[in-house]
Each structure stands twice: as structure tokens, then as C-alpha cells.
Length: 446
Image (cartoon, rainbow, N blue to C red; front, side, top):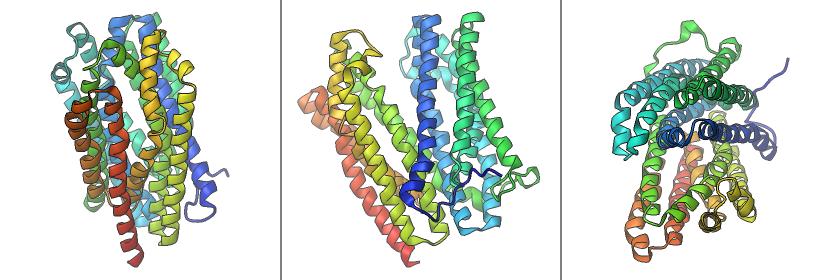
């Protein structure tokens, strides 16, 4: 019988981390491409107003998705810990408490989002001609939040068990369905923004059903059983202890980036458009690097559960090396291919030139973020999430705001604005590495 799970506590780490992470990398890239296809279809067949309406909600969609992914990271770490320790009772209770928690988190985001969508979009200074379509799109899209919560739950559990391939298959299938439904609803049914939103929620429920079906059929200790789905207060506490800081961190990054965007907007429209074009590189690079952060958390948690302390540190070093190298290679590669890359988003030479300015600064900067994010994932794998989140808030959120009102305010150049990324990553990384090593030494003694 074919097995999809992987033993993370034995064998070559260099090989297993890579085999584990590659499907995650493809999953993350597919999500970026499918999101781009939503904008492409609505922009091509529904017109600029519809495109602007959907685009104006992107930061909120990123924020809500980030909250659910952050919560799921707590599920991943705790599930991997109990798989490694081979504690069946703790594993069963963690999984069955998590499914309730993730589902209700999706429901909460759905309710609050639908209720406050007009007020939030108005506060974001959404253009008057876009706001009605933007509210419609967001309210329909938010109906998929419970499904997204369940998919992230299932993905977290399977990833903790070393299975990153099946979530990729389900995402690929649901993504293809999403694109086909986009075309059908927008071109044939003429639903415009409502059609794109409807296609998204249908694909989200499909992926959730597929991943839950696997867990309900599974005979492993992490399998789901209807009779065992109930609240386990102590497990809820631990999941929230790890997941809420991670979710909060994702939300604050989105808010901090609003300050950066506001500073970009102080330049002329050419620089703003060039920044927007070049910024399409960010999710591509970050999401590929993020595959190794998930691996880092899962490998470290399983080996902590199995009390293989030497393998904890080796897992961290291997994941950090891979994430650093992938960030460096893609960053430099995008700069070398800057002209064809930017040509995907603009035909204006001046806008492309502005985009090249951003790529020239970010090319070598992306890889530095690996030291910060991999260290946060490592601490999370050891069950520590609160202090790493406080560190990242101080170093990568508040520091950026201070930088904008001091360094950038003094130089007033776009380069001085872009440099805040690498400096904030560097100082945060130093603190995060020191914290992880302290926690690791304590874990080793215990």
C-alpha cells in the first residue's frame, strides 16, 4: 500500500527536508499563480473597474488568509510533536480539537468581514467608483473562510506527518477548477466580480472536502473520527498559545506594509507603478522560501517529541541553508531576468526602469530574511511562539515605521525606503537566532 507520510526522525536530513519541501514550494507557487489568474480573467473580460475592485481587496484577503495560516502553524507544531513522541492520546485530542478551532476561526472571520467590509474599505480610502464592487467581491469571497480554515487545518496535520504531496494534488485540482469557473462565470454568465469570488469559494470548499476525506479515512493516529470531535481545553490552550502569536504576526506585517506603501505613494505615478510591477516578485520568493520554514517547524517538533536533540539543531541548519540559497538564487535570477520579468506587467520603459530599481535592492536582500523566518519557525517547533512574535513586531514592524520617519524622511530616496527591508530582517534575525539557541539549550538540558 502506498504511503504518503514520512518519518522525520531518521534518515538523511538534507534529502528528507528537500523531498518534504519541494511539494510545498509547488503548492505555494500555484497559489500565487491562481491568484494572478483571478485578476487576469476579471481584468481581461470584465474591465478596469472590476479589476480595480478586486485588486483593492487584495491586502484584506492576504490579511485574513494569513490569520488562518498562522493559527494552522500551531496545529502543525503540536501535531508533529505528538507524532514524534508517539503519544496517541495527545495526538488524537490535538487533531480533534484543532478541527473545531480552525473551522470556527474561519466562521469568525466570515462574520466580522461581512459585517465590517464597507467600513474597512472606506477606511482604506477605496475609490468611490470601486467600493460597491469591492464590497460585493469581499463579502462573497469571505463565504469561503470556513473552508479555508479547514483546508489549512488538514494541510497542517498532513504536513506534520510528513505528507506534503496530497495537499499539493488537491490544491492543483481545486486551482484548475477555480480558473475554469472564473472563465465560465465571467465570460458566459457575465457575473464580473461576483463570478470570480464565487469561483474562489467553490474551489476552497472542494480542497477542504478532499483533505478532510483523507483524514476521515486515515487509520493513522492523526485520523479524524466524528465521535472524537470535541473541545479539549488543554489542547485548545496550547494550539492558541502557538497559533495566535503567529496569526497576529502575519496581520501586523500587512499593517506595517501599509506604511511602506504610503511612503511609495509619495513618489510620482511612474515610481508607484514600477514598485507595483517589481513587487510581484515578493510572493514568488517568499512563498518558495516559506516551504522550508514549514519543514523546519515540522522536523524540529517531531524530533523534539522523539527527544532527538542533536537532530533538532541539524534540522534548523539544513532548513536555514536551503531557504537562504533559494532566496539568493531566485532573487539574483529575477534581477538577471529583470527585463522579461517586468515586461509581464508593463510595456512602459520608464515604469520598467523604476521596477529595476526595486529589484536591484531586493535581489540580495531576500536571502537575509531566511535567518529571521527560519529561526521563528524553529522556535515555534519547540513550542515557543509568543516571544519570537514580540521580537519580530519590534524588529520588522515598529523598526520599519521608525525607519520611514527617520532614515527615509532624511534621504527621501526610493533606495533608502527599500533598504528598510534588509536592515529590519538583519536586526530581527540576530535576536531570533539568539532566542532559538537559548531555547534549544534549555530543551537539550531537559
